[in-house]
Length: 566
Image (cartoon, rainbow, N blue to C red):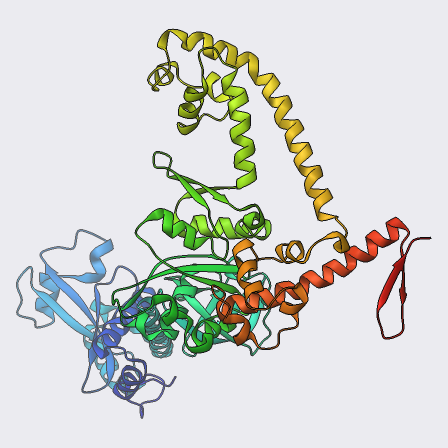
């Protein structure tokens, strides 16, 4: 950058005006920074002990240097001698001054001021002692001015970027993936670069340089090298912000996202409510033919999204959150903020979800601890509790019911309970509490053996049921094995003409399948996909079991199949 010191034809005013205009920096700030830098450079060159000041001359467009010298009776401090003149010497120079007066001399360092510098050295050289220092400072001053303006420009650009993006925290931005650094993706946002850290990326998403990246602004940090904008694709807030963009009712505050839970790249759930009784919050988020939710799903690269209605009643809310599974009963434990959910046997795997995902997301969404059991499992637990608790002294059938209602499921619970708390349960004789707990401790070993046996039998029964030959199943049993199909759904499907798994899998008109009461277009799509997957798995199982049983399959004329044993 040319400066006044390097080229007398260029005025610093022009440079300052241009930088202030282009970079949005206050001209006064630039001048103050330039004066400070020039003063620091001058002290390094002329001596740190000199009392120097730098002042910008707007008329000339240059930074002028001045040294202040104080008049004293006698110079006693050698260090400050460079900034002092004794009274006698000043009078010899023809100065009419008194002790304490301050004399200010301009330091001429530019080539254009060579005549003034010579005249000054001739008259005041013995006082200022600058002659040997002047040489070379013009070049230093020019370089200093250049560096200051460049550095201040860079600082201002960083500050402007920080100020621009600090207000965009918690918003969605769109940029272009430029490069990769140790797994982090550097995203070009136009005026700034942002980083998408590995921990904020969705595992199954991949990017190449030049790809469009839409992400949530997680944080804006002020760093020494410039502001760092941290993005996220894994945040649950990305999900809610995308719905705000796609659903006008959310942006207007008519529909409210009450809660959201997400496992990035897998599945997400949001709970919505409406401030207007005429607006269906779930329908507003789904959109015409699913257009709005599909736009969000596409941006999240196929992540499945469940939209559930929010309810002030926690039990109803939890039941909605577990959709598409159906819940039979809910037992609420307010003290521990937990719920026990009882579902039909054929809904248990659906309620839990793959690797526990469905119940895990429902728990995150509602904020309640959830424990899911099937109806047969609950009956089994209740029968076991009757045997275990009924074996304790003084415990009759009615007291078993009372203890069960208070959360006691086996003798171990009685043995480990606080004696005072146990004595306060209606029907419990305080005098018998010690003997009850003593017997409960003896019963624990027997109970544990019985529980292990029950778990083993249950697992064996499950495996045997899972490997029943498909040809031995009724059409109702086959349909019950399709993911998402319960007893109620089977009744509705059969009543609408869908009597087999093949009827569902071969249905090409999803709208027709969606017209089945209680199904809807979204569930129709899920049912068709689940039916197709079931038929594939069923064919594999049939072939495997036939091979184990030594059954061969022959193809008859017309494409029909017949089986026979050797």
